[in-house]
Amino acid sequence: MPKSYNDGCLLAHALDLIGDRWVLLIVRELMLGPKRFGAIRAGLPAIATNILTQRLEEMTAAGLIVHKVLPPPATVPVYDLTPAGLALLPVVEALCHWGGRQPGHDPRRFISPTALMLSMRAVGSRQGAPMVAGFDMGDEAFEVRVGDGDYAVARVAEPQVPLRFAGPANGIAALVYGPRPVAMTVKTGPGRVTGDLTEAQEFVNRFRLPT
Image 1 (tube, one colour):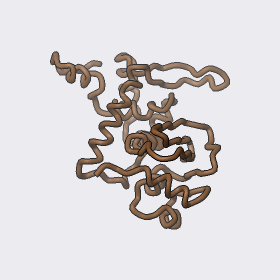
Image 2 (cartoon, helix red, strand yellow):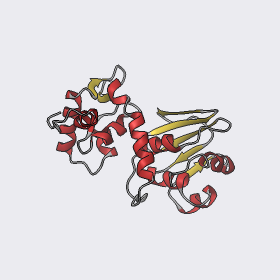
Image 3 (cartoon, rainbow, N blue to C red):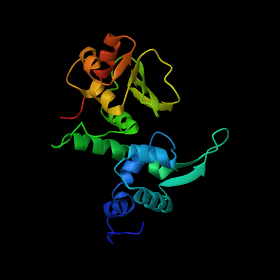
Image 4 (cartoon, rainbow, N blue to C red):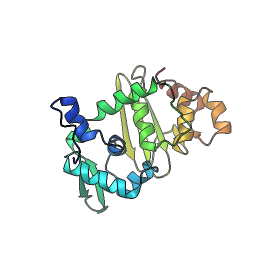
């Protein structure tokens, strides 16, 4: 990376690699699978295109990401995390927990689909019987399996499970984290539920933001 703290501390070395503005958010957007430039940009609407290009070049040079072409039939150029980039998942989750305990968080601000999935992974309870739900947010869709001490989230073309949440990421976040019951929230918000509402409520009860 072009900037350095010039400090021999391991924390300083880590911040040399990931401390620049936008770097960890780019890592976040790639944590659940490779993306094209435009898809990364869609998940970070506040970043300027030239800054995103610069950060991607710097992160490639630092060994955090690679630029590659997907195999057929896709055959499109994408950015993907290296093992070093993927190893930042515990850091991302720890920062989600820490940030949730600090004042000033505004849930009304834009949240990307990937960001919502990672926040749910960070705070979701793994206890209880296994449950699975799909999340369809337009350009991105996921399936989440939770329970029996395990948690798994996977990007999919389209959810293939009976219980599905649909709508913009902010609307689904209101269903998952909002103070009102799911049955009430779906009546007024953009988030929608396909499947049993009682099951949907049981599913979202496993997710609580840090306080």
